Image 1 (cartoon, rainbow, N blue to C red):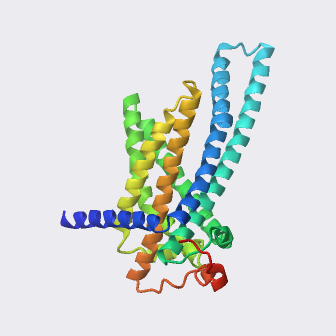
Image 2 (spheres, rainbow, N blue to C red):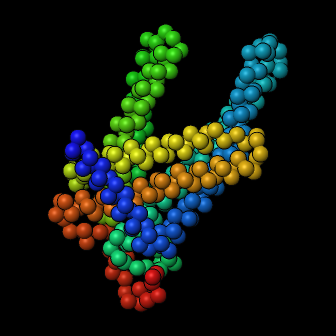
Image 3 (tube, rainbow, N blue to C red):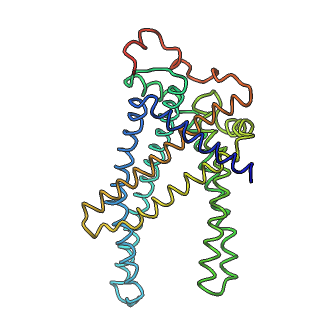
Length: 317
């Protein structure tokens, strides 16, 4: 019990340090937060105006199939309409997923760089920040691709385990309880796996290590900090889940402007939570390096910490 309380104190401590880091250079941190927030808002609007109506149309059109006569020519014509709508839905979904992934990766890049700069007390002009950030996109992209593959494989395993359990369930209540319990179990364990995933992204941005090497290095240097980071992941995950459930309840048929604004605010809050989580992992990276007795000055793209005096003139306060 005492050890658990100590871990909780450490969790509160790193949350407080992350808050102080954000306030340490408010102009830079707010700048790197606002732009991705706007992009995520646009993605949400795309989802509302493009994907949700397509899903609604598919459901409505599919519900008419059982009531139609297969021998009637209109039946085949209706099927063709459904297939065409489904094709549009798939294309829109791919676009949505691709744009979301790009925004997510760019958001990770800027927030980790900004956190590292602020932590090291390095000032840089906002106009120079995009160039410094974009120089390091290749390594994180490779690492991010591996993480996505691992996550897809992990949740594919979830369905493999779930399917026979559902077959053995004879009652609807039992099926719902089994699915819910298994989902919670897998979600909690994913929070544990995500410790290495998040830390490997930070490593791939700040060092010359990416892909499997970054994942391996993250698993080595994180020893001793896993309980704290695991609780942090649970905290951020639960917070995001609560916001996401509220977003799902947004009914655009009621007072469209109000509900749309509510959805945008909630989506922004989910994104802000994720960004704050990345700030904590940036701090955790430096703590892990200190615990390992390594030199944190060996960051990749050290030009942003060794800018010339001309570049630093007029830097952020």
